[in-house]
Image (cartoon, rainbow, N blue to C red; front, side, top):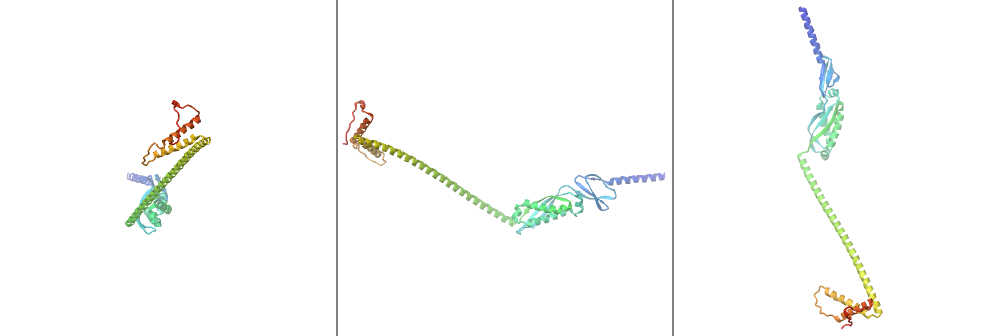
Amino acid sequence: MDSISVGGIVVLVLLALVVIALLSGIKQVRQGYNYTVERFGRYTKTLKPGLNLILPFIDRIGSRINMMEQVLDVPTQEVITKDNATVSVDGVVFYQVLDAARAAYEVSGLQNAILNLTMTNIRTVMGSMDLDNLLSHRDEINDRILHVVDAAASPWGLKMTRVEIKDIVPPRDLVDSMGRQMKAEREKRAVILEAEGQRQSEILKAEGQKQSQILEAEGRREAAFRDAEARERAAEAEAKATEMVSRAIAAGDVQAINYFVAQRYTEALEKIAMSPNQKLLMMPVEAGALIGSLAGIAEIAKSSFGNTPPPSGRVPRTGGPS
């Protein structure tokens, strides 16, 4: 009985050891992680997410590497620019492990190595630029730092996805000087814009006056043309009238002379009446001559339109100037 009980205990112990060995050889890897496996201290393989088997008591887990994209804060540091201005700079770094074995065995202290590499290249890149370029070309700075750091970290099995500069803080006195400079630039631009506006206003005003003068000159030219045309027609009419009177005189018609004199006489009286000056005109002014001239006009009309008896039995009167 004693031998049987001892044998049973040994079997149970052996079974327990087998179960423990099997359980120690089963490894579960979480999503987003990779585990490195070492056999007698030497790297052999990488375990992917899920259930994996290793040799118990021979293989062991070396490093648990996070394969997700990670972020590191770059601490604030002072950088001297190309024009000897001192600024305080900080930032963030985004990276992702692509090869767990290289990240575990190619570098010691992965995050510390990334931080030191980034800070060194920030000083190098920003130190080669003027302060004005440093403040206005932040995207260019980020791209240059990312390119340099990614190339340097590639042997470690990393991919640097982004490098971002968060703050660039110049000294207080430099900030005040930049504020005064910016204010002066804004005032200068305001004066330039105001002068430009006044210049445009003067140009537009001059253009308006020019167009107005052109239109006015064209109006005067048109009026002068029409006045000349009217005078020409009046002269033509006067010439025709004079010609008709001349023909009548040549034909021996004395009444034509009376008509011509009466016309000029009435025109002179009309101008005297329309004069704005104060005047005193005593009538009749050679009324007999005027009536005689009108009688001459009637004779000319009668000779022109035929011997038609006058209406109401009136007989025209003739006479010379009294």
